[in-house]
Length: 176
Image: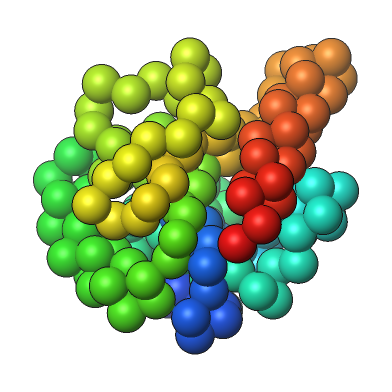
């Protein structure tokens, strides 16, 4: 089994108007040291394109900066980060936000939403809603692409894909 498990910080446009915050690096992100380069990142790129967004104009990062894994044979499976891990990585996330100064932030999944919008926000109930935060004029949460990949049925997968694209079309309408 290949080992790495080092920190993985964000990348993208230096003064991006939109920042995407994911949950934590996955296996490929950990191995390559770059965010959103695995299967979820590939799906995200496809869906962003459907929404009319060019990833090269964004800054992408994660709330948690390391891959928490659970070995299963030769596979390295993602393990959900704890609240303490989210809190301990928050200063790095805040430093990235301060450096980029985005106009809008999109939190992908519960961990990212918890880090920036609080524990009480439920992505399933409040996806696509803009909230004003100290981090950006507009912050919203939506489903993480990995949840789309893990959807139990084709019908659910289709619904989640549509939700993701529709939520990002709201970013396009802001004309940032």
